[in-house]
Image 1 (tube, rainbow, N blue to C red):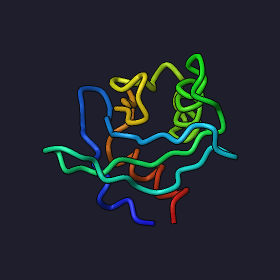
Image 2: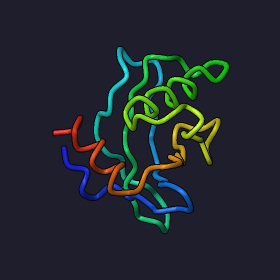
Image 3: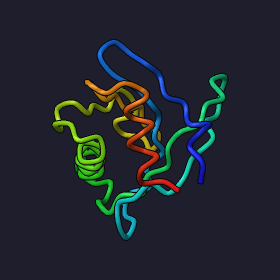
Length: 109
């Protein structure tokens, strides 16, 4: 699986990217990429989460997953869009696009 086509955006104080979430999976893991529809033509990260999509549990699991992956406090991870959708926009405060790419490359072959 290659993340070379993943769309990472440098924002003020951090990095933003899109995620396609599959809640209720066996375990939390990055499972690939997902082509985004629309004019952007970007690619989102595909993430499986063990938590169900009930009462915000999957969103909390997503924040914990990325906080652990990027080694930042949970408060540094925000869901900027798609709070009630499977496709979400994630912001990581305090990490450059290079740092995000490096952290993702350590767990993805």
